[in-house]
Length: 281
Image 1 (tube, rainbow, N blue to C red):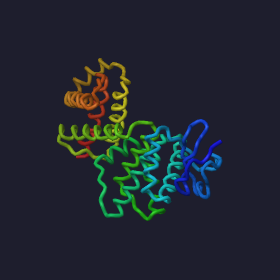
Image 2: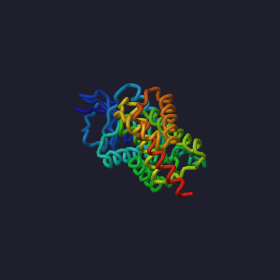
Image 3: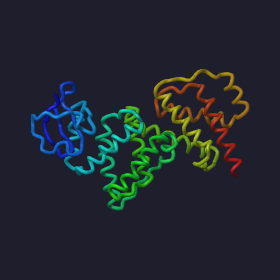
Image 4: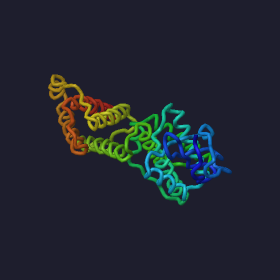
């Protein structure tokens, strides 16, 4: 039996659950006319999620003090839609993190403040499905609120969605995205080129870097490729040398060992990228 502890607004109720202790129920009009101690069926809620600890409970309650009821209802619909799109449950913290982020983003847009995102392209390439979902969310916000969400903000929404899907900390994801951008700039500086962000080889490089950074961070080491390493060192010495420098940067930032085999993949990706740049010129 789920009973009402406190009605926070017409759409949000704090309730007592026999298995999860205190939970939050979200649904249009769910709290209307409800009283403390009254039984409420969980299936009535459009979305049901568990507040797992006291800190998260307080964060959500504080959120409701300054975020408009209609905005809360809209976010509930969007998060439910995301779960349907990805056919997966999202980490419950997205109700706090993404709602808070978008609320203040909308305020900044209404005040005419610009939103800059220097890692937009890397984010789009690393998480294409999440980026598409974020772009569609932005379109619905435009229709619902008359607010055009800029492309840079779509990148930030993408990271929130990816964080909730993978249960990875948003700070860690941001750090990885910034590292990938730094590695790309390192390549541009080393060869004195401006990489075409629409080049298919750039897309492949960024996606590889994203997976490589995650593998290193998870200490999921690739198999040894010693024979191929020697061949690439002879065939593409400049790309080979740069790959080791990139690996050193990764190792310094992540504070974890980067396996030697990573030099094989980086050398090949850098060589393909450079070949494409030369053909473009």
